[in-house]
Length: 90
Image 1: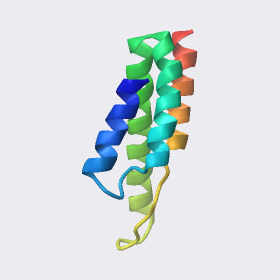
Image 2 (image 1 turned 45 degrees about the vertical axis):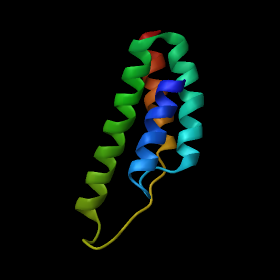
Image 3 (image 1 turned 90 degrees about the vertical axis):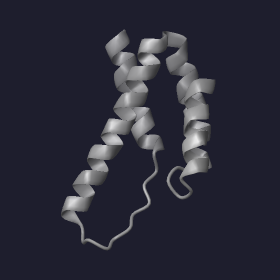
């Protein structure tokens, strides 16, 4: 729980406007569930969340206009990455 929450808090503090504190709070809850299953679930869920968010942002940049700035919540990607990791571990 602390590992994932601390990772997102560090990202939120070093890159203002990148990750919000609401996402950091959600990371604590997601980290609690994934941490209960072990390090493999925690690392898989975290990696899947970042990869899914990166692919979504790249796809949106290809489709949308060049100067368009978009705010994107990270919580849905965390939830989907955690769900896939939980189903893969079970």
